[in-house]
Image (cartoon, rainbow, N blue to C red; front, side):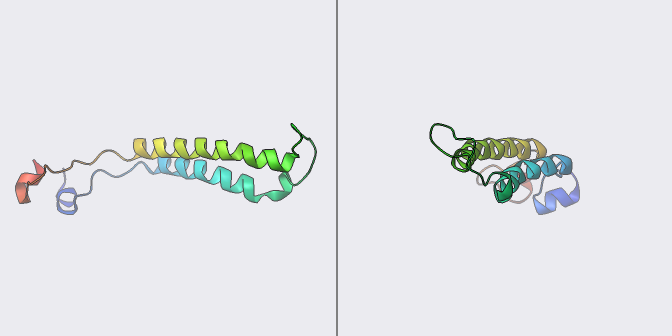
Length: 95
């Protein structure tokens, strides 16, 4: 462990490439739902609902999946930090 890590309490740096992938997963639902021209139509009708309605409803589940995937990727990208034992102070906390 370097002097800087022990002084600030920060752990190893995060994998920036994986964090970018996580950001892309979070942006997918935003772009898909803000691009209204791609789904602002009635046809095809599914179970009596126009395309506009069931497309947005489908994104409720797809957004949850994208958020879960981003969450998992962030956990992989950021290694766990060592947490000092309770009650440990000063030099004892880093051991």
